[in-house]
Amino acid sequence: MFLDTVYGLFSNDMGIDLGTANTLVHVKGMGIVLSEPSVVAVQSSTGKVLAVGHEAKRMLGRTPGDIVA
Image (cartoon, rainbow, N blue to C red; front, side, top):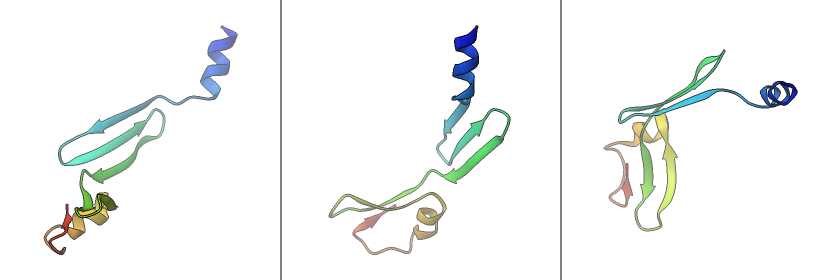
């Protein structure tokens, strides 16, 4: 149908895997476009997100007490 063709021009088939160790995003026809560790570094006193993914994983065990990863 015409609408299916038009809709297909503006959409992508995507899959997101929110795993315990890694988060993956797969786009049809492109493969995996994002692969990041499922880690977030947060400043506990403010709740502010300081880093995500690879950057947050590098912070594990190397942060002051008020930063939780």
